[in-house]
Length: 445
Image 1 (cartoon, rainbow, N blue to C red):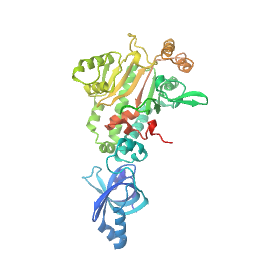
Image 2: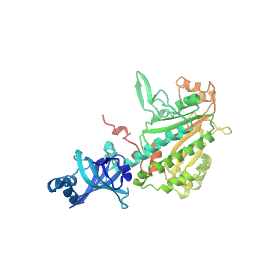
Image 3: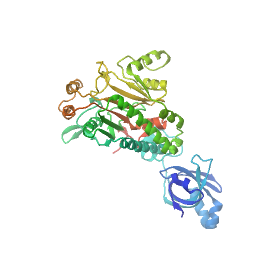
Image 4: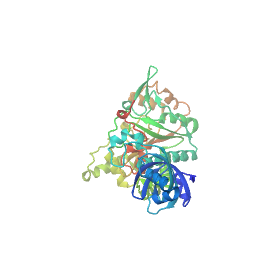
């Protein structure tokens, strides 16, 4: 038996005999040759078995038996396979394995996801197995790299990671999108955001970030929306909104570069055009006010099929797509109307109708990936906003306390991980960027 290695590392063992623990993703061949598509969790590549080689090594009877077992391996059978690594320029991966021995570890019978087209509903219902597919595997490698690069980015800049509660007693993003549960006789809700708790953390540590699941009790009507998704939410004391925008742009460029540098295999598997991603790193992000964005949409209304928009309306997906594609790079939309944004955003210093905030729109039709703002610091203003939004002053007393005891200018933002993964991978559907189904009607007891 050769060195026991992972597929992703076979490039270091060219012309050497190695052993791999893997699953059979697919097979083909006829007569004296068999081709196996193998996966081991790090990558996919091909193994090639020649009948004469097995007869020469093991003798007529045992060699034929071993080769025959390879030809009849079922999809997702687990094996321990030994062979010599060969460079292969014809292969997308660049290497293949000349098989010299094989041992079946676990049989697989009637694997349901065969190498053919399956409907989305079927694949979602078999998500626990769909994770094994090439595309899902590559997407999850990118997702993992974004998470790793996130910690790298914020740790290098002196941020402290804090964990916000998943069960909360309040509704920071609005009362109509809450999953309610019973908490020992009192109502509690699945968290919509970790931001408010991050603000408390920022007053203690200066710069913090949270990373965890967030929930919206609304049906996932489009490919962009989920009932559960993961959010990265930094919060920074003594930081203006303009300074926060600089952090946001640097962060997004950092995670894109990390994926290019460290997951070229995954991007290649997904046929993602890396030159497009490189453009986003090299080009400054565009900034445009909400006012100017609305005017631009109105100016081009006649030539496009998006719905007519008036000042005060929130943007729909077609509007966001058109704006970001118009500029061709990630685009910040600044200073939205106060009426369509959250209660905690700081009012504009010279206008009563907008707040100091921004959404970052990803190009190529992927929409908003970041929402951020400078936070309101005036105690009386926030009390009035709580009343306006129908929120309990008692439940938010702790949040108001942050404005009573040494309040400072502070800003923050939230990046939706799944939507960022969808954009960076060039994926069509956001639901393919999550590890398990999040739709309630798909949850099984």
